[in-house]
Image 1 (cartoon, rainbow, N blue to C red):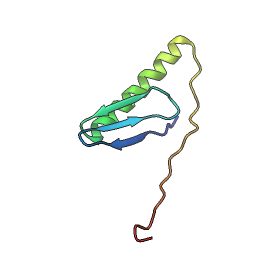
Image 2: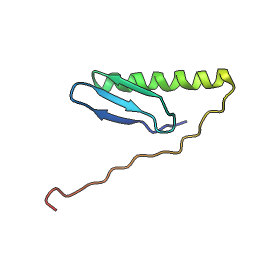
Image 3: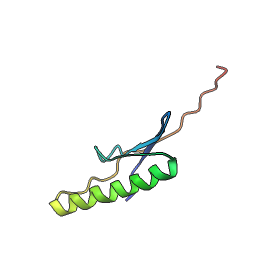
Image 4: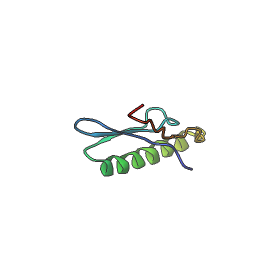
Length: 72
């Protein structure tokens, strides 16, 4: 499965969250760190759902990029 992850750079750290898995978040000092942590968080969350017999949510979100002309 492929889940969309949103990465955000803050003033002092990076954050990440998964729109299709509410509550699955990570915070790290660098993008590399937060990428590793969100991967671990997703795996941990899905493992917990399986252990509880809860169905795994199918990915349904996607991200896009919109370019804006700064001179416009």
